[in-house]
Image (cartoon, rainbow, N blue to C red; front, side):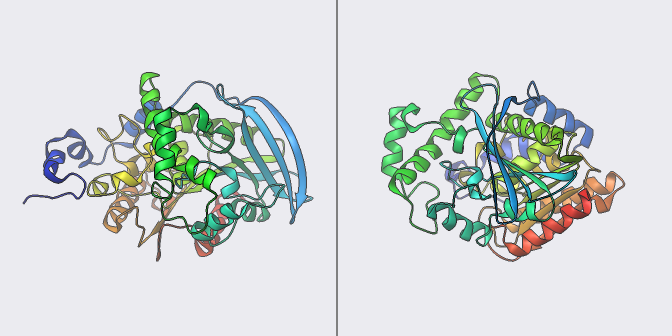
Length: 378
């Protein structure tokens, strides 16, 4: 029976000849996947350099702190630390990870409130993906110390438009409003629209540089998230219980971090789970290079990576009508992760929950995730 893939056309017979799909047909040993994750994703060093407190504020029941630190190269990372106002003693920590969203102009601002009001363009993004909530701030109000860092390519760590190749700058001008986020649910200032469009094209260039430097975008991002996790774990106001959470690209980051760090107590992956094979029809174009680290797909599937630290607690939240992940692929991933945890002797260590609706992390999902985190960390 011949298969026709929407974006492969006359090359639809290619996957049948490739090693990757055949290798993924059998679920690999978790120890082997952990070794693979460390081989292709781990990087040197765990200490963020020169951590500085830039400012502090108190608002809406929270104490906020903006810190900066060096990731080893490029601009200093800016991150926000949020916790309940007047909190005494140590609290569990959560690393809240912003998404990709085809929106690289901002990072942490997309999911957390800072010392200034969120700009209208961020408010529009939150309405679409988070039912209007700054979920990291809401999570802090639930009794956590929440660290929200920018990561390589976003916000304080973004590439200046002027540093991008002239061709990429021109593509940004030509494709603003048509390159992701092409379905943005609000009015976007023209300079931000041009930047986000250029940054979408520029990610291909970044991955080429990564290849020349012997790494991948996924590895660089995972390394920076481990730096943030190390800071969170070492803070005097946190306990030894720490977790990660994120939607979409943030969920991708949560899975990469879970696979490469034993410091995490638990992890939440939202809207970023499916079998690789289910993406072959037309979904590859929608996804970031973070989702396709070189060397993984030839030996394991994405759900294998997410489950490789079993029996450590893992929550995955799926949307049944997610336009980025076919439901059959999400179900296949759920079944595969379930099998990994059953093999580890802790079937209850994994929780997979399916929700109606599009690609999102709405308030119902947030309540479930926050309750699950409280049960794991308190």
